[in-house]
Amino acid sequence: MKHIIQSLTIVLTCCVTTLVQAEIAVIVNPNAGISSLSEDEIAKVYLGKSTAVTGIGQVVTIAQDDKSPVKVKFNEVICKKNPSQYRAYWTQLVFTGKGTPPVDAGNDKAVKDLIAANPSMIGYIDASAVDASVKVVYKF
Image (cartoon, rainbow, N blue to C red; front, side, top):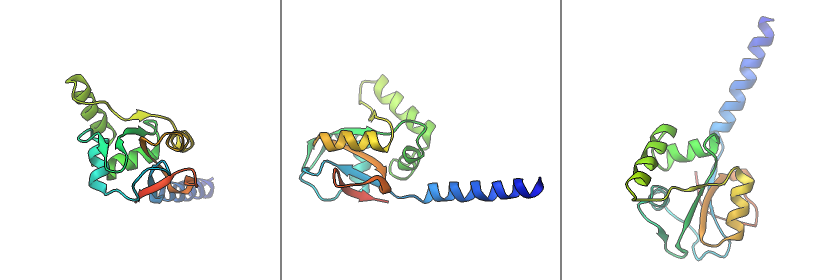
């Protein structure tokens, strides 16, 4: 029994480590007039400090569901906020009428499908889910 528990612990640790190390791709529609964005530009859009991106114009930010590990990593790396800080940040902006939070669209596939169909949206997905239907403008 002790060996089974140790084996399961090792397997779970490997799975979590792999998930944490997965790359995230910030994506736009392939017809968008940009080829890359900086981390700072992405953060400004996702924190409501900017509503437009050069080459796209006004953008709609698309996010993944709150429980998504991709969203957690995105918010920690790009927005410099843990899940509760991110929720509190947007609650305050919405309450004061100073912003509209990103639209929670679901998982990688749902986000990718929305971006592929709409040139005014920006989103993020696990880099392994990228295909020709979207254009990567930043990866981390």
